Amino acid sequence: MGRGMKTHKNIEFELENAPPQALAGVRWYAVHSQPNREFPAQHQLENQGFEVFLPKRVKTVRHARRLTNVPAPFFPRYLFLQLDLSHHRWRSINGTFGVSNLVMQGDLPHPVPRGVVEAMIASVDASGLLCLTQRLTVGDRVRLAAGPFADKLGILDRLDDSGRVRVLLEIMGGTVPVRLERRFVAAA
Image (cartoon, rainbow, N blue to C red; front, side):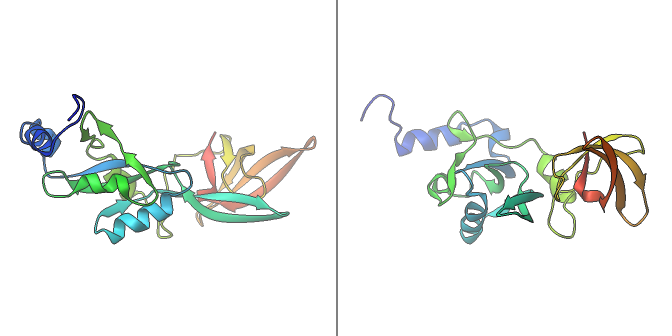
């Protein structure tokens, strides 16, 4: 074998002598997917018995003069996977359809800091979308996240208790009020 090649015994030795925090039970790990293959990668990993979390957001797609709101990954090309390095066969993950590789630190997968994925899971709304709500006040500059005015900047004019907002957009030299759901507005 060449000098850079690792044998099965070398890998076992590294696992046995790995720092204890690296093998400390079940942890969340980041998986780098192939371009636009997050959903198939999630499906394939779940079929293998792994617990997978793919944070999603709403994205407005324009095609043939039509606007469609579709779910899209919150972090393009990344999803999260829960595994225990001492029990799971984690090397098979890199060969899964839609997966490029696990995010590594040296020869072992690098765990996501504790609490990060758990906080995102707790922030998922009933429709399965990640809802990181900021505290908005009237007069704040906001960005529209979906709809025909997606990515436009405006001024928050009104908040109501039903979850709807009114945003003032400057279009062609005039101010136009737009009413939409709170989840489609983010601080600019």
